[in-house]
Image: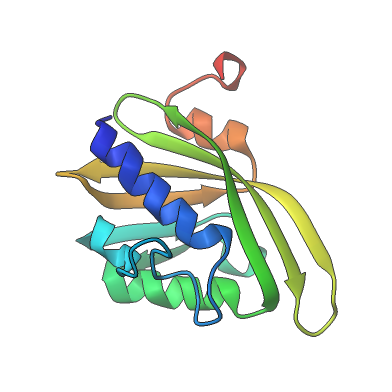
Length: 146
């Protein structure tokens, strides 16, 4: 993967580390929409949240809708980047998902991994996983190597 792809991924991840009240769709460093780093025909698949499992979201509006659905049940939500693994044709980002539910106060602290594919410096596909081993396997890597 190119350094540009890695930096675009870091921008996306930074928006989730301390999202503003309106949601994590703005780069907190530049004020630009993070959708600027997405291809117009981007595809997102969620295998992390149980009620979103096997859902596919398409285009910028689909990703915005998925983000809203993802963030809606939580009063506090942070996705902290731990590392990025270069898998050659794609990247895998490993995170900690930390959140507190609005209505119950239940706190979450769980692993999260995302497989990313790029074309021309923009994200064309990404998929979330509950387990980093699953994401690394989907990227064609053995988790024991990373």
